[in-house]
Length: 193
Ligand SMILES: *Cc1c(COP(=O)(O)O)cnc(C)c1O
Picture 1 (cartoon, rainbow, N blue to C red):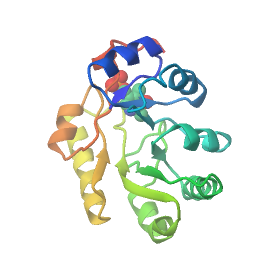
Picture 2: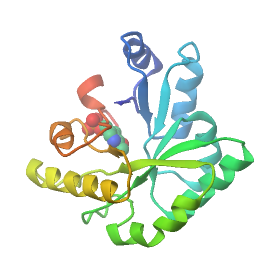
Picture 3: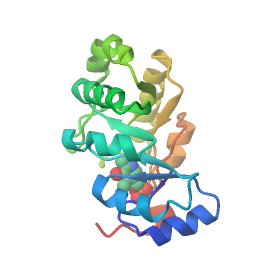
Picture 4: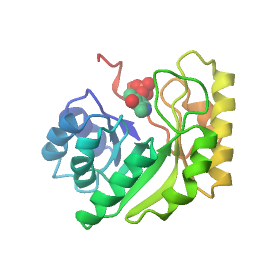
């Protein structure tokens, strides 16, 4: 996935012309402008990867194909309810936090297992996999261990996908079994915000 947050529609257009189909955005307002600009590329699949506030759920469901950042039972329930109101189905990834990280959201291993039966039952959402972000202080071998833990949890739950790995750590993420790497700066150049 090409993470295009902070980049203009023209940059997305250039990659789309080279055949890139999956793009990730982390803010609804910013994404909607680009999605509107790029309606001549109906094959683009938009992935929502940022923290999702409850008042943005309806907008995200209408505009995005996959939500990678479902980090609480309440949020999953809300997505499910609004999807049924909108007569839509949406693919989601459950965001997990398998190491201490005050900067990030996500289910712990135990917390996810506790609510799993309930989340699985929710209508109008398809749980495709788990998503995780490595804490900034981890080195590559610690990241690989984290990604392996995420992969085993996904396997245990019967989930095919793991959305893990960014520009700094995508190689070890793939070695650990990632199915979606989310690349921003390595594709588009350094981020400025
Ligand atoms: C920004 C972002 C990325 C991409 O990060 P890079 O280091 O620029 O590749 C991936 N995932 C999430 C959730 C992001 O917010």
